[in-house]
Image 1 (spheres, rainbow, N blue to C red):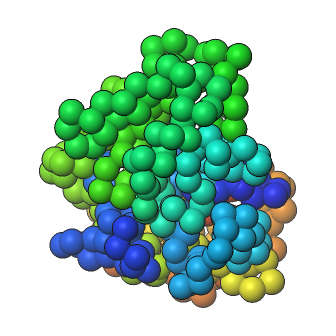
Image 2: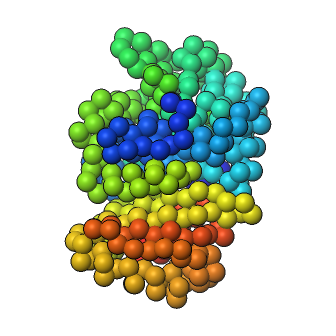
Image 3: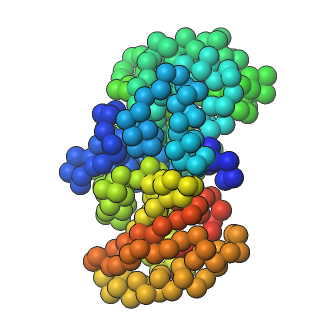
Amino acid sequence: MAVLVTGCGLFGDDGGDGGGSAGTPSPTSLAGLLNWVPDTAANRGKVVYYVNADVVRAGTTSASGEEDLRLLLDRSSNSIFMPTNVRDGILKPEWFGYAGFDTRNISAALEFGPPPDGVEVLAGDFDLTSLEAALRTSPGGDSLTVDQTDDPAYLAVGEGEGLSFDEVSAIRRNGQPLIWAVGDGDLVWANSRQAVENAVAASGNTASTLAQNPQYRPIADILDQQQVAQATLLTGEATMRWQVAGMGETFTEGGGSTLFVVMVFETETAAAESVDAFRAHIENDRSSAVGAPWANTLTIQDVHADGRLVIATMASTDAGISISVAIREDNLLAF
């Protein structure tokens, strides 16, 4: 997993701004994209990564993929997240020729699941004809299979073959299988058809997804209300005070961001008792990954309990912190 961040790693429609509500979230919101994530122990056990590129664009349109990518990088201080397969190849000149899309087609994205069956959901505007034509020109594209029996359409290259190093390209960094499901403006990407099919099935049966999980959904709704540009969701280990937590941020000028942290506790009492402990942790403790005091990077603007939730707002001098903390397994939420 990673970021197109220089320093940490490159990135993770209705044309909306990413906002959603508990009833009908926008398809590009965090809550909306959680509808693709089956509520399983395996998916809850891994970090969920989210990006809303439209929030970063703020209505600006670009004439080319290169121009759009530069816009996203500039407005995020080189810290915008994009799913692994996009991050690994988007900077290569052959990307568009093999993929048939660029960052302009991506409004928002989500990455979830344990490797090697991780899934990337790209929400935006994807044209099946363009995708198919591009895949056919890519290394190994002569074996492309297209299944349009039902909606969505499935496109596959190297399915069931493992790694094929002669077919390494911008869209298949290790020559791994490529499976896409394309429909209704969305593209679901994984190494196995089963992983893609599980996500597609979940999107049509939202009662069994993380969007309906009573611990994940309140976090997603709060982060959506803040119109975060990117976020991570994670389940707490046994030693953590909280059960599920989310970190989301909006970018500010000068290489900083506003960081929002939402944590779900077992009881309202546990949440209330954790407010002062979290404040003291940020003000007095050091990053386990970097060694510097958290207070050098974060300034608390507000932290309070709301029922079983603790919600904190902090000014950050480190754009991308919502992603980098999860990638480094840093101790920001260990208090």
